[in-house]
Amino acid sequence: MRRLILVLCGLLALAPAARAAPRVVSMNLCADELVLRLADREQIASVSFLAAERRISTAADLVGDIPLNHGMAEEVVRLAPDLVIAGRYTTRTTVGLLRDLDLPVLDLDVPATFEAVEDQIRLVARALGHPARGEAMIAGMEAALAAIPPRSQPARALVLRPNGLTAGPGSLVDTLLTRAGFINIGRDPALQGYSGLPLEWVVSLRPDYLVLDTEPAPSPALAHALLHHPVLAHLPFELRVIGVPNRLWTCAGPAMAEAVALLAGVSPVFSAEGRYP
Image (spheres, rainbow, N blue to C red):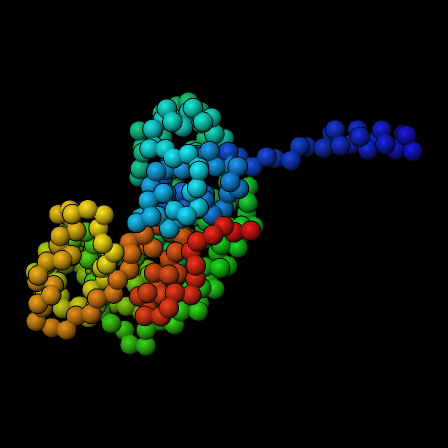
């Protein structure tokens, strides 16, 4: 028996140690939302300050006492994480400095299709050491979307965001509008090249629906003033408004299902809050 115990101890000593889940810093809102849902609490060294802003974050309730960062290199280096997750188009100076210091950085792109969204969820879940949680998130998202019937009659919709921005082809918003049964007027080639959509175009395009962020702005701003312009209340045709909080479709993740439900005119069938077991 003593010899057997010694042999077993020797085999255990030779076996590779289980890979510990990495400690992670997230510097991007969309990365924050995935990290907060997929990682263990003790893995998360820091998330961006945007994650705690309820108006723009769908995971604000999950932040708790997790330290917040402002995307500065000195904040990240001090925490000595095993992995940094950033956005491909944000905090680029910091990302460059971190790579110069040989810190591993995972850059997340901006998915525009359901397939790309699922691929990104899998990527982050694997990087965090929890691939099964990623699959659970995807399954829940797919089930929620499948339960939402598209509109029975296609309708023409136009998204109008602060500063008059709209959503065209190749965007996640366009994908969600199409899934909800809308024809996205923002796909019109005539709109290409406009950084903002003049209200005259809203009148001339005559959409059936105008999709706005109807949540009150945190403070007065010219960017939001356009959404309350008197011309929108006195259009020479019938126009219906659908309110979709921008936070539901700013990032690629499970909250997309709630955005589609609002667009389709049904009660939300999915809660975007909570972790995945």
